[in-house]
Structures are given as C-alpha cells and as structure tokens.
Length: 203
Image (cartoon, rainbow, N blue to C red; front, side, top):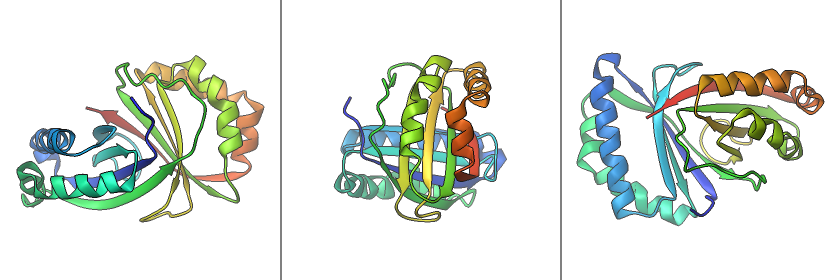
C-alpha cells in the first residue's frame, strides 16, 4: 500500500437511535468509493470521547486531491449517502482536509486497528521534529500507524493533527504512561496547546 498525502476528515452528528443503521449506510458508501474511485484507504468509527462524542468520524486517505474530487462525486451520488443524510437523523458538522508530513514509522496497516487517538494542537511552528523523535515510544508501546498532518482547509486551519491507531486500550495506556516520563514529550507540551484529543472506536 502506498503512503497517502492527504486525509479528508468528515464528522457527522447522529441520533443515537439511528446509529446502527447509520453505520450500515456508512459501510455502504465506503464500499462504493473503494469500488468506483481511487482512495488509498478509508476508515470510520464513532467518537468515544471529547467534544463530538457519539458522532460518526469518516477518514479518507488519498494520494492527491484530484482523487478526492473523484471520490466526492461518487459518494455524493451514492444511494447510501443520500439515505443517511436525507433521513433527518444525521448531519455533517465538520469536514477538514489535512496534508500529511513525512514522519518515519513502520506503519502496520495490515494489523487490526480498533482505536484511533486523534490529537489536534495549535502553536508556533511545527512539531514535526518532536513527533519524529517520539516515534519509537509509540512503536514500542503498540501503535500500529502513526501520522502527523497539517490542517489546510475547514475549521482549525494551521493546526496540526497526530493520528495514531491501536489494537487495544491497554496499548494506548502503555504509550501515554511512557510519554509521561519522556523529556521530548514534556518539552513538546510546553511548545503547543492541545485543543482536542479524541478516541475513536473504529468499525
């Protein structure tokens, strides 16, 4: 699998009573995008913590924005997409595009990820060097994938996003226990403001 250059993040509120049906419909238009367009990968899940807890989060990875443009047309016309958002039970509340930075990490995308921890920060300058240096802490703690991106459209333009996937909550706990004793991490927290950290349960 090639490395993506862009991630399109869509967050939608959903009536809890409609959630099971909404996830079925999300799976439907995900498959249609994969069949008819050119995404590198697509993941989705439910936000378990944070400001948008209970919302559906949909992550599309692409090599180029031209590929996203093609996919956008596909899923806007998909029956499952129309059924979801014409139901009156779901509505898009955020759509951002983020551009990935090149952070060396042996991505284990073939392993089954159950959770995504998404951290958004603001601050002066990039945290690229610190995130590169912290990669071994995440890898040794059990992180499966580890990507840093700049938010380039939508809300929070100029912020940076760190997305890390895990196979278990125990691995998340292990990583953050190790980070608490890491000088690079302590220095990073003094440099940036964390304005969001959400755990997404992936489907």
